[in-house]
Structure formats: structure tokens, C-alpha cells
Amino acid sequence: MERRKFIQKTGAVCLGAIAGGTLLTSCAKVYYAQYAVVDKSIKVAKSEFDERSAVVIKDDRLPAPIYLMKNGASFSAVLMLCTHKECEVAPFGQELHCPCHGSEFTNTGKVITGPAEEDLKKFKVTTNEDFIFIT
Ligand code: FES
Image (cartoon, rainbow, N blue to C red; front, top):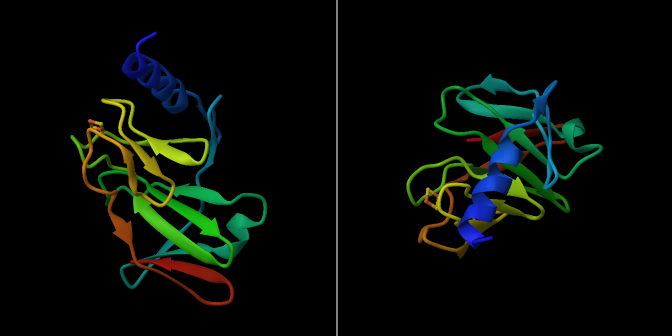
């Protein structure tokens, strides 16, 4: 199977099995985190990471969800919108893949494989003892 078609098919599977706030796929299990909007920041409880290292935040004010990842004691957040032609990327193992034309990004948004040439949009992330703030 041609690589691009494989990615398109697996991407469709990744995006096609949403059940009860959790996206179960053969390539990744995605958890949609609870959040609040406080002073233009998205506030997420650190407890959302008790059993996982990444969550997705779906805020209708944005053109795509945010992928929020924990790496040790720090967090990173990227917009899941491909910089090639704006398809929504999906988690695929430790990476984010675009189902439209096959671009691949690290889970912190850096381009691995084109045709996308720019990294995913990154958000500023700050924390306190109990919460993560995305701006
Ligand atoms: S829109 Fe993502 S690779 Fe083209």
C-alpha cells in the first residue's frame, strides 16, 4: 500500500472511534481533558495526568484541538492543525500525523516529515502546584 494512502486510512481510523470522551484507536488512545477558561487562559488540572502523559483539549474557540503533553515536570501544548493545508493532525504513537498528505510532527510539534514545512503552533504553558495554564 502506498505510504500516503496508509496514513490516510490509519488517520481515518484514529479519528473514527470516539466513545465517551475517549478516542480508542489502534494507533493511540486519546483522552479529552476537562478544562476551564480563566482570564483568556485554558486551565487544566494536573490530576488529568495521573494516568496518562498526554491529553487533548477541544475548545470550540480554536480551529483545532490542543495536544497537551507532559514531559517530566514540564508541559507543552500545540495546536493540532497541520501547517500544510490545515487538516487536523492525530496522535500516532509518540508523534502527530496528518491524515491529509502525510506530514508528521513530534509530539511537541516539530516537523519530521513534509510536505508541511512549519512546526505546529505552540502555546505558552505555565503551571502552579495544581494546574496548567495554556495561553
Ligand atoms: S494538510 Fe497536513 S500534510 Fe497536507
